[in-house]
Length: 192
Ligand code: GTP
Ligand code: MG
Image 1: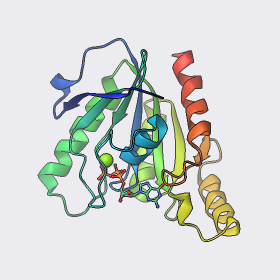
Image 2 (image 1 turned 180 degrees about the horizontal axis):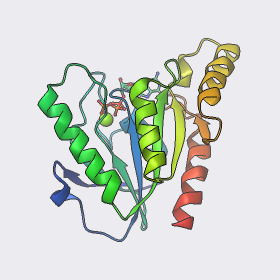
Image 3 (image 1 turned 90 degrees about the vertical axis):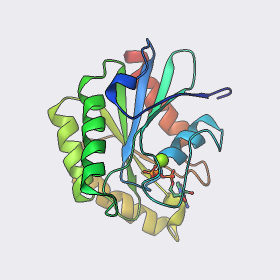
């Protein structure tokens, strides 16, 4: 994918871009690798800002990745060292987006392969189910497993919790899963 570009950063719902594109949102815990997944998918390592310090993406960032598609990088949740006020502000911002955004066609929920489902992830998943937001799961950082057996076990544990959700193993480091996740995204985008 050539020529993806930064569109806009929104700290408040009023700042969401007007548009007719189909949006794909990336959600997950702080530091899980949302921005890295976006960069890997578009093949531009420095498009979305990544950092080893959790909690870096503080607003909602919109990236145009094609004529019709916009990727949306959401602030991560679950980072303990954020003030309550700041955490509440993020929650409000994310919920405003997820609840009302008409352009939103698909949520990609990211899980860290070694951690699997954590309480906040399950909370979000239940919320998406309740509000009938279509979502898939990408299990990222799978390069951190020592071998295939560990990888298989990790994925199996995640599947047991959510057998009905489409699941894509992913690594921003090796590029594994890039093609598969694009296929999943493409299906939703063309249906929207
Ligand atoms: P916030 O914006 O803070 O919520 O984080 P994020 O979810 O956007 O994570 P980000 O993409 O910034 O990645 C966090 C850290 O994990 C960085 O140090 C990345 O280099 C690393 N990382 C992301 N994806 C992978 C992966 O697939 N494999 C490995 N080994 N490291 C990864
Ligand atoms: Mg980020």
